[in-house]
Image 1 (tube, rainbow, N blue to C red):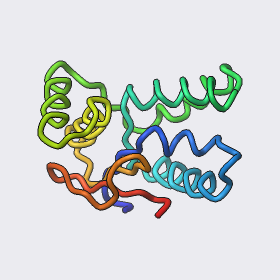
Image 2: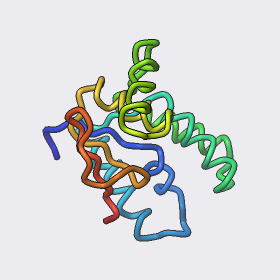
Image 3: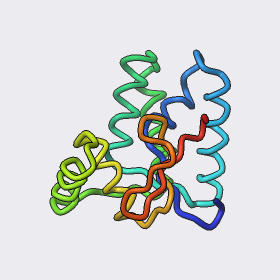
Length: 138
Protein backbone atom coordinates (compact mmCIF):
# COMPACT_ATOMS: atom_id res chain seq x y z
CA UNK A 1 0.00 0.00 0.00
CA UNK A 2 2.99 2.31 0.28
CA UNK A 3 2.81 3.57 -3.33
CA UNK A 4 -0.97 3.78 -3.54
CA UNK A 5 -3.17 6.66 -2.54
CA UNK A 6 -5.62 5.35 0.03
CA UNK A 7 -8.81 7.08 1.06
CA UNK A 8 -9.55 6.83 4.79
CA UNK A 9 -13.19 6.98 5.85
CA UNK A 10 -14.23 8.81 9.01
CA UNK A 11 -15.03 5.59 10.89
CA UNK A 12 -11.36 4.60 10.73
CA UNK A 13 -10.32 7.99 12.13
CA UNK A 14 -12.94 7.79 14.87
CA UNK A 15 -11.57 4.42 16.01
CA UNK A 16 -8.20 6.09 16.68
CA UNK A 17 -9.89 7.69 19.71
CA UNK A 18 -12.35 4.95 20.65
CA UNK A 19 -11.01 3.20 23.74
CA UNK A 20 -13.99 0.80 23.84
CA UNK A 21 -12.45 -1.22 21.00
CA UNK A 22 -8.69 -1.44 21.73
CA UNK A 23 -7.90 -3.85 18.87
CA UNK A 24 -9.64 -1.64 16.31
CA UNK A 25 -8.07 1.43 17.89
CA UNK A 26 -4.58 -0.04 17.44
CA UNK A 27 -5.25 -1.01 13.80
CA UNK A 28 -6.73 2.42 13.04
CA UNK A 29 -3.81 4.24 14.68
CA UNK A 30 -1.29 2.11 12.76
CA UNK A 31 -3.05 2.81 9.46
CA UNK A 32 -3.31 6.55 10.04
CA UNK A 33 0.32 6.78 11.21
CA UNK A 34 1.49 4.75 8.19
CA UNK A 35 -0.34 6.96 5.70
CA UNK A 36 0.69 10.18 7.43
CA UNK A 37 4.36 9.12 7.24
CA UNK A 38 4.10 7.96 3.62
CA UNK A 39 1.91 10.90 2.60
CA UNK A 40 -0.34 8.38 0.86
CA UNK A 41 -3.50 8.99 2.86
CA UNK A 42 -6.46 10.93 1.53
CA UNK A 43 -9.48 12.25 3.38
CA UNK A 44 -12.16 14.77 2.52
CA UNK A 45 -13.75 17.78 4.17
CA UNK A 46 -16.73 15.51 4.89
CA UNK A 47 -14.49 13.03 6.73
CA UNK A 48 -13.00 15.79 8.90
CA UNK A 49 -16.47 17.08 9.76
CA UNK A 50 -17.75 13.61 10.65
CA UNK A 51 -14.64 12.88 12.73
CA UNK A 52 -15.05 16.07 14.79
CA UNK A 53 -18.80 15.68 15.22
CA UNK A 54 -18.71 12.04 16.35
CA UNK A 55 -15.66 12.26 18.60
CA UNK A 56 -16.95 15.30 20.46
CA UNK A 57 -20.56 14.14 20.77
CA UNK A 58 -20.41 10.35 21.13
CA UNK A 59 -16.90 9.79 22.46
CA UNK A 60 -16.92 12.96 24.56
CA UNK A 61 -13.48 14.05 23.35
CA UNK A 62 -12.73 17.59 24.46
CA UNK A 63 -13.43 19.93 21.51
CA UNK A 64 -9.99 21.53 21.86
CA UNK A 65 -8.31 18.11 21.62
CA UNK A 66 -10.53 17.11 18.68
CA UNK A 67 -9.67 20.37 16.91
CA UNK A 68 -5.95 19.69 17.38
CA UNK A 69 -6.42 16.23 15.90
CA UNK A 70 -8.27 17.71 12.91
CA UNK A 71 -5.24 19.92 12.35
CA UNK A 72 -2.95 16.85 12.40
CA UNK A 73 -5.24 14.88 10.10
CA UNK A 74 -5.29 17.84 7.72
CA UNK A 75 -1.69 17.04 6.82
CA UNK A 76 -3.14 14.13 4.84
CA UNK A 77 -4.31 15.11 1.36
CA UNK A 78 -7.73 16.73 1.90
CA UNK A 79 -10.13 16.45 -1.03
CA UNK A 80 -12.63 19.30 -1.37
CA UNK A 81 -15.73 18.27 -3.32
CA UNK A 82 -17.28 20.48 -5.99
CA UNK A 83 -20.79 20.68 -7.37
CA UNK A 84 -19.80 18.06 -9.97
CA UNK A 85 -18.81 15.76 -7.11
CA UNK A 86 -22.21 16.24 -5.47
CA UNK A 87 -23.84 15.25 -8.76
CA UNK A 88 -21.48 12.29 -9.06
CA UNK A 89 -22.38 11.19 -5.52
CA UNK A 90 -26.05 11.36 -6.46
CA UNK A 91 -25.33 9.11 -9.44
CA UNK A 92 -23.45 6.61 -7.25
CA UNK A 93 -26.40 6.66 -4.86
CA UNK A 94 -28.87 6.01 -7.69
CA UNK A 95 -26.84 3.41 -9.57
CA UNK A 96 -25.26 1.44 -6.70
CA UNK A 97 -27.78 1.88 -3.84
CA UNK A 98 -25.36 3.53 -1.43
CA UNK A 99 -26.58 6.36 0.78
CA UNK A 100 -25.87 9.81 -0.60
CA UNK A 101 -23.19 10.39 2.07
CA UNK A 102 -21.44 7.09 1.28
CA UNK A 103 -21.72 8.01 -2.39
CA UNK A 104 -19.92 11.25 -1.64
CA UNK A 105 -17.15 9.32 0.13
CA UNK A 106 -16.84 7.02 -2.89
CA UNK A 107 -16.88 9.95 -5.32
CA UNK A 108 -14.22 11.76 -3.27
CA UNK A 109 -12.00 8.68 -3.26
CA UNK A 110 -12.40 8.25 -7.02
CA UNK A 111 -11.72 11.92 -7.81
CA UNK A 112 -8.66 12.04 -5.57
CA UNK A 113 -6.96 9.19 -7.44
CA UNK A 114 -7.27 6.49 -4.81
CA UNK A 115 -7.43 2.78 -5.57
CA UNK A 116 -8.47 1.71 -2.06
CA UNK A 117 -11.14 3.04 0.27
CA UNK A 118 -10.62 1.99 3.89
CA UNK A 119 -14.01 1.78 5.58
CA UNK A 120 -15.77 -0.40 8.08
CA UNK A 121 -19.20 0.79 6.97
CA UNK A 122 -19.21 -0.11 3.28
CA UNK A 123 -19.25 -3.48 1.50
CA UNK A 124 -15.84 -5.12 2.00
CA UNK A 125 -14.35 -6.34 -1.27
CA UNK A 126 -16.79 -4.50 -3.53
CA UNK A 127 -15.36 -2.50 -6.43
CA UNK A 128 -16.98 0.71 -7.60
CA UNK A 129 -15.53 2.65 -10.53
CA UNK A 130 -11.99 1.40 -9.88
CA UNK A 131 -12.09 1.73 -6.08
CA UNK A 132 -11.76 -1.36 -3.90
CA UNK A 133 -13.58 -1.06 -0.59
CA UNK A 134 -11.49 -2.61 2.17
CA UNK A 135 -12.50 -3.15 5.78
CA UNK A 136 -9.16 -3.18 7.67
CA UNK A 137 -10.79 -4.89 10.66
CA UNK A 138 -11.77 -8.08 8.79
